[in-house]
Length: 157
Image 1 (cartoon, helix red, strand yellow):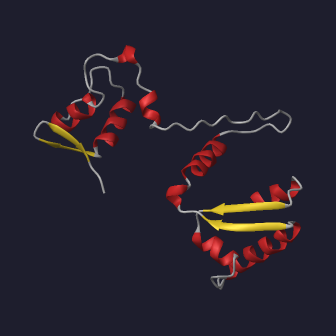
Image 2 (cartoon, helix red, strand yellow):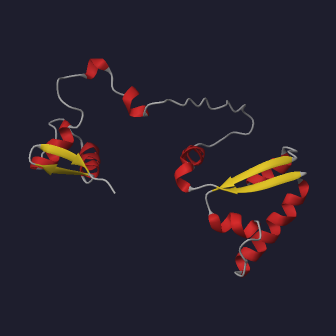
Image 3 (cartoon, rainbow, N blue to C red):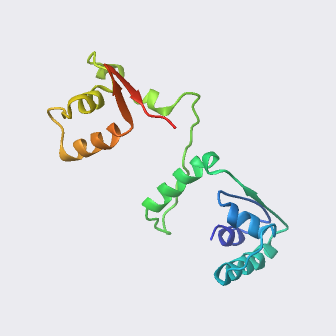
């Protein structure tokens, strides 16, 4: 679909980045395509790329493709009216993790940010005003933490 969209836009030079080694290496001809369903798709793509003056395919590790995953997730969540102008998405890159910006000084009640997780891991207790959705979220978050004495640790690989 992306290649077809590029053709419709009359793009002549295209770089394709994909996090599926299967797709990229089969298109490049480095891997053989035997599955009859995939043979048809490969043939279709090879016919489509004839429209370009220059097209290259690059394999991108999934860990390096987080932005594309996020944009794809956002794209699947909206319904676009073709009669409307689509406003561009402003993307900012910060040198520190985004969660550092989400904590406001006014919210500081002298409790650590992880207080609710600690309370749940320690005693299986929820905050007083917690809704059912809050409780479900807290249980899901608490799975990633372990308590050693009085110290809460986040589990790692």
